[in-house]
Image (tube, rainbow, N blue to C red; front, side, top):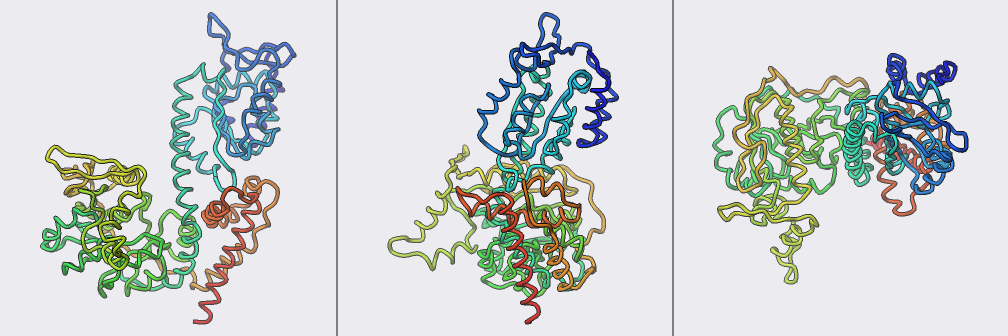
Length: 560
């Protein structure tokens, strides 16, 4: 029986915790007349959908609460839960009461179906729980946004999907689509978290130490019309003559890994780009950095590399601290580094500068004939000084090649072959995805590498006019910014209770400050191994370390 008081209480909880858009989708719908509620043997309400020849019940018809408790016993993990279907919320409530849910999403399709349930069953105990967010008839983009804004692996733990079988069977296509979107979003976040766990602390310290260097004035670069981009794959050797005799006006962007190979052939690029946060990237500049050539650097690049250039041009990438710096210290250009490799970033730079055509050399995305890098790149002198009678040059290259567990051999009909790995294939696929959003046309010279959708013959695109690369005027002096940032970190309330709830309860600016430090938290979580600290302890440890990094830089700059 419809109970308007129950419905309005549910709607109040819905609007209070899940937003007016969610509440409007329910209120503006008409209740599905096929939905009814019957009583289980213990008297508990159980919603069902009348399918004509049968009733599809969403929960147990005997003792749904007890069955939900048994169901909860099959879940040992505490973390981020996604519930596909809500029904009367028995399983959701049991997992909440058991403390399994740090944060979670409820995905429900069919606002009329949900309205029919909310008119009959009081679900305020579920809808009013601040750990949860309800999505009603969400698009794939809404699912991506909800997960991206809620799932922080370092503090929310692992991911768990809980399908309500009695509900999803009534709308399998919709819930399957949601499951696919969730899988993609979680996969992207997990990949990003994996990278953060290795480099989060280094990114943070590098950005802080680059603040003073990034304050230098730099003349604008661009616009350009044609760009040549050199990667460091073996096929680069086949194109060096073409690169050396490139037409006047073709702007040559060398990735840092390819710079040494170009300089050995007497080819001076028009620009160099580097995004690696590791100190090993210093080896790419063992032949020096040409005085007049601008070096484009991610703000998270090592300061040892930043100081090599007389003209360091910094840009902002996806790191939260980079975005924080760009909004409060100096507006740096933003380049797409999501491909995870420097070739991807170089193409993004060429597009930013307004190129209509970008020719790419040496991007093999594989190891042609078992060869890893073009001759002349850093790895040759690096291995040269490390070889011995027991580990000759060839042995070191073989070890480098076969360190990959996912390596496979790929052959062409002409007898050529190459080795491919999952990371290299992922780089190729990301560049292909990037190409669809660019204003320029990509023309990848394949050489002996894998085939890709960016090979010669791409279609023409609308070209940007007059784009130049230039950072804005600083809003603050470097020391003033670091002092302000240190004060913001120190003003954060100490973590307490459940870490996810603590972060949710902060103000907007406090959340922004914490976001700049969370990649470092991922690194501390990995370093802890199988015995990670409590999430609140992890946050406290991270905040203390980040504050020390900033204070150390302030002390260093004062002594200079």
